[in-house]
Image (tube, rainbow, N blue to C red; front, side, top):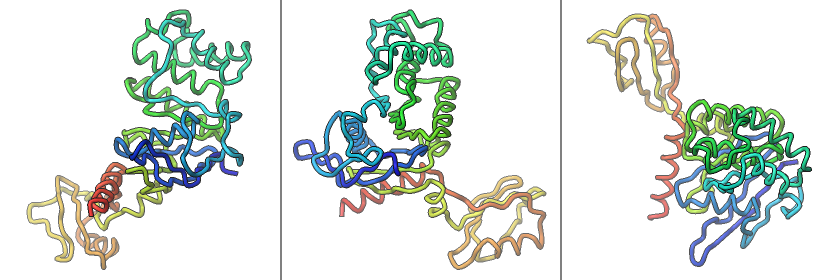
Length: 305
């Protein structure tokens, strides 16, 4: 059974359709990248999954049941706009938010202590939130979101304002939770983070789904007939390739070349192997950022027509 199922969900504000007939499923243990340019409908979709707002049409299912109030405690949501009570003590804040999720007082206190120590905030537990740096407040918000280990986590720009060391702490927790079959919806503009630990992406623009695919499958689909080759010896000035092959760039021991669609890697390898010792030969695979830009630009061109 899928953890979350979104079926034909639509949401409009006045004359603006923010989410337009969006459907997708989320399996257990999946780290799911929710991507799209500003105004694409990501936040509106998240708000419906967390029941802050409700769809005008369509249905959301959680663990096979229609999403309802009883599922609130099974979803941890960290919004991009942080919402801590600044004059509350750190430990009181975390325990209070865990109690709202249905966690007993004693267990909430134990979870609070464990996660504060893990995130190197133990000595700050009796300080008011407003006395903490922005990065420390970010970690407190993250702890309050994940400490009860709900089946679904929704993290909106979780690394914003964090230095690399603290970002790594959060990355480690996300990977650990995925191994426990906890699912994560991860919304961010940082493509390199999505590539690093998301299994699947949902790309939306103007409220509509453009891509819903496994990242590895998607990148393979966008592979181009371009190859990067490293030779054992430096490339000479009079270096030449077969006439059908276009040299795109070269430097020292490396060059990049493009083949026409009717030729494959074997053609290039055959010609190179007769003259050179090859250290590395790989097909160019576009980054997720390049794929994202291509899809969004294509969508804009289609809509303008």
